[in-house]
Image 1 (cartoon, rainbow, N blue to C red):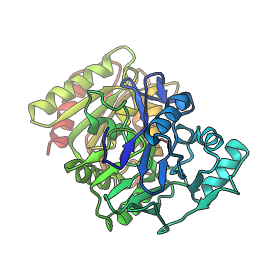
Image 2: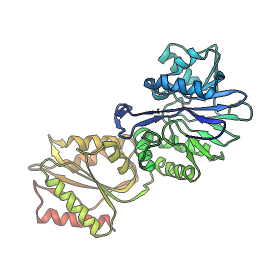
Image 3: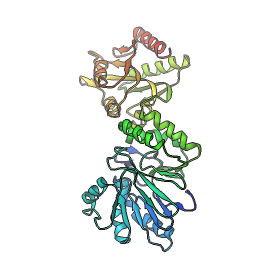
Image 4: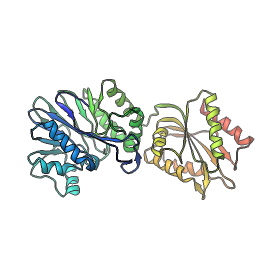
Length: 384
Ligand code: FEO
């Protein structure tokens, strides 16, 4: 990836990790981005995951072409970016480590060292001149850790955005970056909408031509405003997809039949609809889509006096990420004492601005004329 003559990419692609952060499937791999600015002084932006230390240190060496790095800017202490700080510091003994006070506490905890003799603590608005390039630091607490700093380079108008504006997938892959950016955003940052909005407010004062995130492709041109606009919607929990998402679990296929009927009825009424079988889908894809659609239908069975386990995980994931601003409907199934709708409502009771559909569907074991008519009435209401 080329950013400019003086700002160079030195990150790595990871095709080894199956679950990023131990839970998010990454079938297209993952990128740990790192950058260098070459000027009178040289600055390296962030290290990479531990497994790629050798490759990354070689990248640093190659790009510096015999020069020593003057600074290592540490944006974020999560180990996918910080794991090689100590190796870097031991190799380049004169390099100054630049970060905020909270990061140095974390360095002490991770590495047993806080680089007291060679560190530069920075906070909001502090600057660092490299030559013709000047860096301004922007704190971004809880996007998505407390110590995060972004850096704005004012000569080339580049924002080094830490985890923000990232995406799943190795760089150079052939996939829809927006979809993977959505799954990444809601998975990792989705809980912290208020904090993301606070950083977007700070960023609105900057003229940004290029965004260099810690994961995924560098953003330029129209992609900068596209991603900023998407982040404004996502962070404010404003649906950006029209229509209905139906998320379901089904044990013997009867609940699934009701879901398929609802899908057909919605499509016949011209309503966009997408469906997730929660037992067989990427749970975080389902969660990110449910946070994006206007209307969500939850369909599940009563199970052990509760709801089916995959639905429980799904709903917990939504609530944890501040699920709100939705119209919601329920389809429940139970052979003798259906309680799923009541339990699902209880799960959502602390969510803001959730409006329940007037129509719901109760299936007593299998669809019959009554429950089929209830599905059709629900379709009418959701398509209004
Ligand atoms: Fe990519 Fe929060 O680390």
